[in-house]
Every structure is written in structure tokens, then in C-alpha cells.
Length: 213
Image (tube, rainbow, N blue to C red; front, side, top):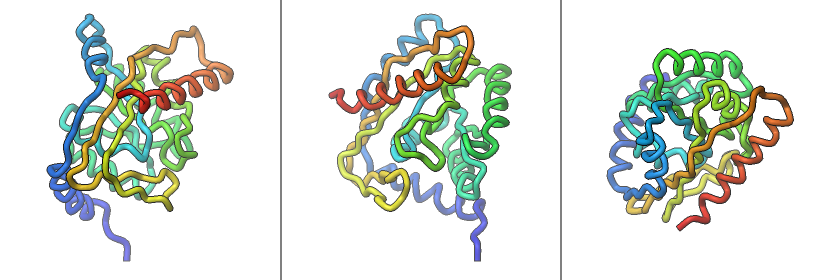
């Protein structure tokens, strides 16, 4: 018997809140985002995350009204409801299902009501740690900067059988959320060579972040 996602979310959300209570957090490089906004840049920023490193940033940025792209799958319905419980807004879609519609909806919503966004750039089904093109299009279309984000967790359970090798922080662990320099996609038009170039560029920036202390 399938469990209703709404009912499951009502159970998972308070459990996750309690789980977060037993973790420690440190933001590294977030001053880069603050400096960007304090320089008179009223535009939102677009956080780029890996799917397996989602949990620490979700807590750190709770109740900020950030807009997140979530898969249209049944699992996505559960995730969407849990995210809303932590004060996020969601748009349903992905690069493989409902993707074009979702990207257009994100662009329209941010134009009407500017706010920060977050995308798991290798979701919802991988390949793991390979950037998909949607984030490049959104950044270019809205002319807003991408902020690469990584999570470094001291003690964790890695679900090695899942496609993303999802990381669950264990109680008492230190969760470091590391932010890169905000950067803009500077080009007059988007085409395939630019998308290839920019996805590779973001992958490199994501890789370099974990080398920071």
C-alpha cells in the first residue's frame, strides 16, 4: 500500500527538525554573497547544489522564501512538501520531465517577485556531480549570478546504493556549508557550445570549493 506523500511529510518534517538540532553548522565564504548584495545588487542569487549534499543548506537557509526546483515524480511531491515546511517555495519539474515548463515558470516568477533560487544541478537522477544545463539558462535569462555551494560533513552515513550516494549527517557532526564567488553568465545569446563550456566551468568551481579550508 502506497503512503500518501502529504501524510508522510507530516511525519518526516518534525523528525528532520529534531535531527537538525543535534548537528553543528559553519558557513564558509557566505560573506561573498553578502558583499555582492551590499554593493547595491538588488538581484537575487542562484545557489548551485549537488543532490547528495542537500541537507545542511536546507537548514541553514530555512524560512528565507528561497525558490527551489523539485522533480515532478512522486518522491518530488514528498520533498516539495517537506521543503515548504522549512519555509521554501517550490516549482515542480526537472531536466527530464516537465523541464522546459519549469524553467519558464521559474523565470516568470522571479521576474514578478525577485527572490533567491536554489537548484540541485545534477538532479533528479544524475549522473552524479555532472551539471545539467537548466541552471545556466536561468542565470543567463534572468541575468543573476550563480553561487556554487558545497557541504562538508564530518560524520555521515553515505547511501552507496543510491545514484547520488546521498549523505546523511550523523548526530554530533559538523556541517560546513561552503560558498563560492557569485558570477554572471556573460554572453549575448545561449547556444550549445556555451552551455557545454558553462556547465564544465561550474563543475570545476564546485570541485575547487571543497579544497578550501
